[in-house]
Image (cartoon, rainbow, N blue to C red; front, side, top):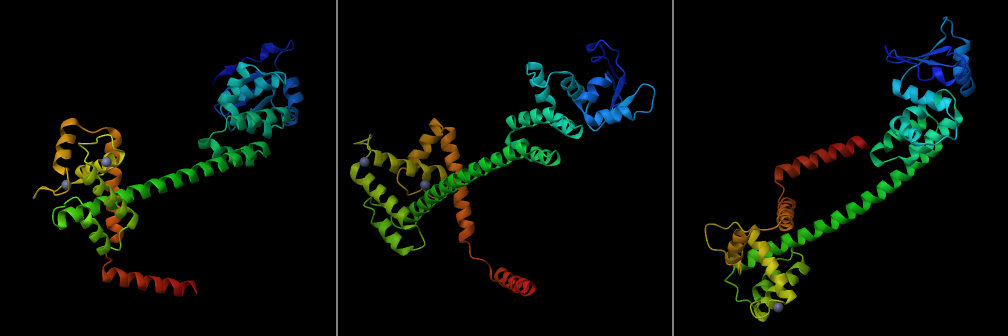
Length: 316
Ligand SMILES: [Zn+2]
Ligand SMILES: [Zn+2]
C-alpha cells in the first residue's frame, strides 16, 4: 500500500484526513481544504467514523485522485504546465470526479480541457462521459466533431466512387481493345474495327468506345515516332501500355499494337509504385465487372424468387 504525504506539508495545521483510493493507497490531506472545496467530501468527513478520518475516493486510479486533490489545493484559476499535464493525463477522470464530488469550477475546467483535446477516435467515449457527467459543452463538441467526420466520410465516398468509375472505364477500354485486335482481323490502324465493334456491342459504354477509337485512329495517323511530344499519342500509348501490363496471352502472339514491345520495355526498365497501383485497381475493376455481368444460374434465380415471395408474405 502506497502512502502519499504530498499534501500534509501544504498547510501549517497537521493533516487530519486519510484519503484511500481503489488500489489501497492512502493520501494524507486536510479536512478544511477538502470540505471547503466539495460539499460531498464535507459530508463524508463529517460522517467518517474511524479515528484517523478515512475518506474513500474509489472507481479511478490513484494518480487521478492525486491530481484531483492537487487541483482542490490550488487556486481555481491557476494555469501552468503542471496543471496542463494533469489535464492531459487524467482529463476524463478529473471531469468525472469534479462532477461526482460537486466541484463546479473544476468540472467546467475539465470539460473545457476535454473538449479542446477531443479527437475523432475519442469522440464516442467522450460523448458517453458527457452524458454521464451532464457536460453540455463537451456534448456539443462531440456533436460538432461527429458532423465534421461525417462530411469528411461523404467527401471520401464521393471521391472513391468517382475513381471507381474511372477504373471501370479503363477496364472497359481494355476489354474493347482486346476484342477488336484479337477477335477480328489485325488492325490496320484506321479504327474501322472499333466502330464496327461498338455497333455490335451495345452493352459497352459508348463514351469509352469513342475515346479508344479516336485515340487509336490518331496514333495511326499522327505517328508517335514522328511526334513524341503529342499528348494524344502519349495517351494512346499509355492505354496500350496498360493493356500490355494486363495482357497474359501466352499461347499465341498478342495482336494489340506495341503489346510485346511495351511488355519487354516494362520488364527491362521496371515500373513505379503508382503504375503498379493503377494496374491493380484496373484488374480489380475488371473482376468486379465480370462478376456483375455474369449470368445468374436458373436455380439461383428460382431460389431467390422463392425467398423473396416468402419474405413479402411474412411482412404482410
Ligand atoms: Zn499524336
Ligand atoms: Zn497483349
